[in-house]
Amino acid sequence: YSRLPSSGRIRLLRLMPHEQENAGVECQLISYPLRDSSEGTNMYEALSYVWGDTNNHRSISIDKHNVKVTPNLHAALLHLRDPFFERVLWVDAICINQNDPDEKGHQVGSMANTYAKAGRVIVWLGEAADGSDQSIEDIRVAGIERHRPLSINITRLEAIFALLRRPWFERIWVLQEVAAARQILVKCGSAEIDGYAFCAGLSALQLSYEKYPDLQPLIYTTTYLIRGALFRPRRGASQSGRFSLRIHPLSELIDMYHTRKATERHDKVYALLGMSSDSDDDTKLSVDYNTSWGRLFQQLINIFLPKQKSVDTWDHEEVAIIRGNGHILGEVSSVRKDDDWEDRHIVDITWQNESGGHGAKDKRNSPWALQTGAKSILVGDFVCLLQGASRPTIIRLRGDYWDIIRIAVFLKDEPRVITDGNGKRLETSTHNLLLVWDWGNSPQVEEYGTRLLSNRVPNISGLGDLDIIRLESIRPALQSVMRYDALAENLGTTMLVLERVLESMGDTAFTCSTWGSLEEGGVSKISTMVNRFIRDNGSWAIICIAAAGGQNLVIKMLLNTGMIDPDGGSHLRAPLWLATQNGHEEVVKLLLSVSEADLNVKDMDGQTALFQAARNGDGAIVKLL
Image (cartoon, rainbow, N blue to C red; front, top):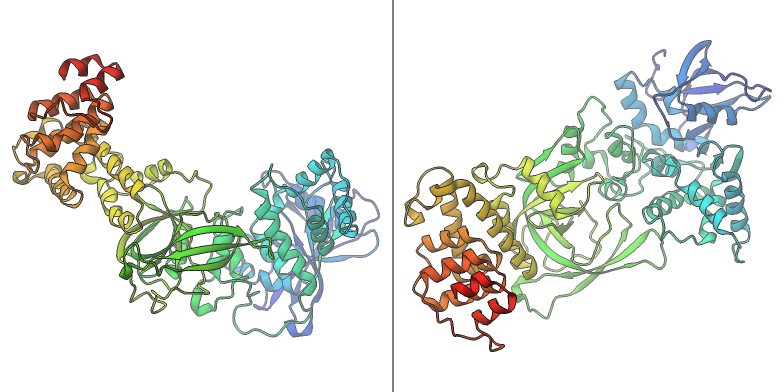
């Protein structure tokens, strides 16, 4: 590669003609100055394709030098070569010096402009396979006969789905490439179809994605952008600064597309910069492959959620752990498809208004029209505004943390509890929030998040698989949003963790008669936490939960606090009942040793604890009672 003389130039690949179909591919590289958008498109075609297997190569000749390319690119060049006329192409793998990070950063940052100024963008789906020729023809005919039902058998339908499951539709770069295009040709092997006709045919087929649910959002978003090429002006207005297609704010693009595939993690951000409607001052991001992924991810989060307590990222993972303060503004009450736009949903939000109390009748709903995202919004998700953020975030409760579903959404109809965009005055409480933003394909379940956090957030005293402080800090938010089922589960989980901690501490936990006198190490920390735990939740409720869960050491610890009267039988009657009902012999034995509860007292069904134990077949508990 010779160095490009100026920032306004690109390299183009001149594909030389050959009458023999399987002859070697011969090319030339030329430097080319891009014309201003106001002068119209340029006389070259830009290739949109998947690199494919980078461990396997084919050779082509460029300026009499042998150059290795991937088999997929080699096949594309063979199919695009004309017998008599040379063809001028822009191909990223060849036209950008991939070994020069500075050039790569500059050229990648200008790719939206490169595709926008191309006379045509060619989408290469790969070689013909799995009935792809017939699939292209079926899609073309469906577009022509869209007002009449088209009869296609199951075998041909599966062939169409095989075509749509090709890697090209999963790749993140293709979004910018087709979003910039003024004209698109879709090509698979020797079969080809106009981009708009391809989208019209797919729409007319009304495919059911029930068998391939993950495929639907990929196809909807891609065809939406392809269809728009027909309506984009061939001549555009001049732009100062960074060229952009100005489709959506960067935060929305990230929310929509971050699960798409990319060769480098950086590209999950850089591929979307050229589509962003944000100004350079808003994003403050430039394409730089010398920046580590962890650093880039952190910069991105600080743009959307500035002034957080901490943001932790890692170079080899697409996940971030964020700690901050925020207000929970409302809850998702319904989600439905938009009848007018297949790639959009209507999300109804019920706003919180703590000034009127939890039972306030003036709570109101607002419908939001949101683009279909990489993560589906569900009923029961929450809208929060983190301190320092200008837009709300949609989060989902995951046990002892919150999963970020949408990092930043545009508020069309702000609730009246918001008085300014920065959330300085809100009629909702401020909560400590521990958030996880995961871009990968990790299972979105509590167990995953628990393992993730346990490996990265220091545990109290280094003990236990869960951090007890995390469980404690989320409870005020659970109470605020009236998630009492989650609150009960949280308390139960805390009991389990406490039991493990006390078990690992052995006799150290019970060397003093009262916890207030313990001053050293982990025991002192747990003493402080337990006293606060009892103060916030009440000793009777806690001992009931521990009795139901069979946490014998926790009950012993609670009794040692001196905050529960061991002779107050009425206080221990319910725990005794719960322990009996769940068959926890050691708990029953402990409660009987400190209490003189009347065992003849009956429950609402007229049954004694002894009868309950007998019915359960717990001979040991029957003997104790």
